[in-house]
Image 1 (cartoon, one colour):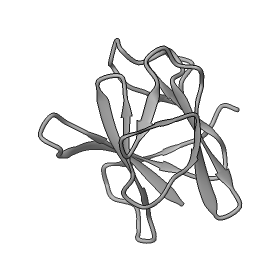
Image 2 (tube, rainbow, N blue to C red):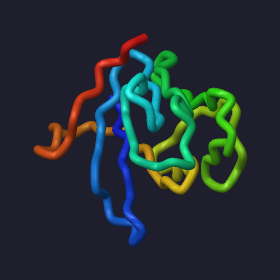
Image 3 (cartoon, one colour):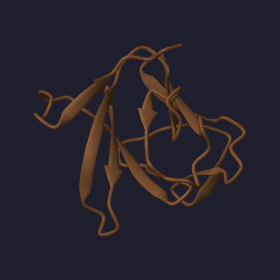
Amino acid sequence: MATLCLLDEDGAMTERWEIGDQPVAVGRDDSADVQINDESLSRRHFLIARQGESYLLQDLDSQNGTWVDGQRARTVRLHHHDCIAAGRTFLFSERCLTARSRNAGTVAGKA
């Protein structure tokens, strides 16, 4: 299982979502599985999907692009502690091998 963590301006984690077997769309619209209040995000900005034991991030033709560790990303395999920038939002990915935190939410993809 992987975890997607939302960071604030100071780099502190403010929210986190566990990502399982179903694809998860991230964006500002109600149709996104993970909704983030950032007007510079597209309605459905990027998708994270499991592929075997890995997770892939795919930009969904967003207007402002998606960046992983400073590189523009169309489709990229995520690694532990990759920094994801989308709009004015910063997130990071991690592989979660421990029990879920009390602040973590499990995302069920709407595929």
